[in-house]
Image (cartoon, rainbow, N blue to C red):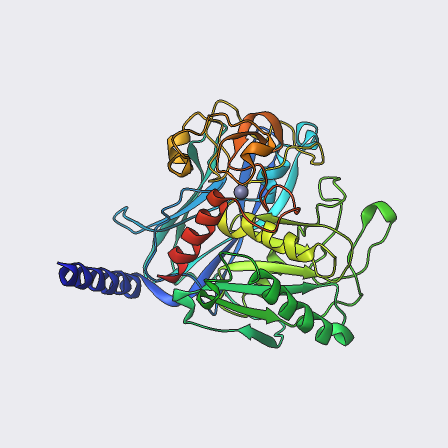
Length: 421
Ligand SMILES: [Zn+2]
């Protein structure tokens, strides 16, 4: 019986590969757009398309099976068949929950990268509404032979291979980008890339599954050293223009120069972008299938790296609920959030319910008796009430203990295997 199942899997795999080869080339199509609006309105405006030299994603798992993210990009063939999809989140969607978004309109650069189609396609980008449902917001018919699709002609930088274990279509490919390293500091950046890799792989489940990862870095120098701290009037000229005080939150460090980020990332095949900034100041950020960023040198860097990568790679939510963020009412308490590690108990069966022992009370008392136990603890997702997390502590909550809770652990493991199988 086992043999038949095994043969079935092989045929399925070959079929997926044949599907990919009949639908797509081995390189990618990058669609740049401007995402603009206010707290209640949003607009997508095409900024341009580029042919990128590599496709770093799976050739087997063409359709998204997670349903994570605040946006969903779907690609349909001329018969209306879904041939590719991926969920992702955006800085714009986070900004929409800030007080500023109620006062003015802003615009953000965003990009969708898909395998380069062999035939005409329709791209549809949908945004998740407060009730959890996706609504189409942007539709674009694309002719792959359109002569306005630009080739990726731009300055080329050297690539540093930190570790390459597998073919890109069977690996989690991380590209590390530098910000605030001058040409004299490239060796320092290479040391920071090695330390990033050692630190990421020092946390489970990354340690046990490190052979599924490829990590490459693009050696692109900045004119000035360090990165911007607006509240101190410090604005060095750096290649990715990262800055602290994103949404006026000191430790939230991000870059809004998304097209430049993608220009650098396109030097190699990639699934995930991680920006290391040349600073010892504490901070960072991570957005699902968008990019992650953290300070390269800080005593807490190891924990920050896996925390931010938890957001960017596995779609994990923050399990903390203090008042340190700029968000107000980030989650609708009447809707089950999409992230795998928080719940409003609206639809808990879709979350970590199966990990609970039968005698664990829901909600679970937040007392020492329940330390290290998987439960349903009130407080998470920037709210002390109405949102629940899987454990008293986790790397998505504090950096006191260097472990993920079981729900986060399994979510990360599942995402690694999605890329690697
Ligand atoms: Zn967790």
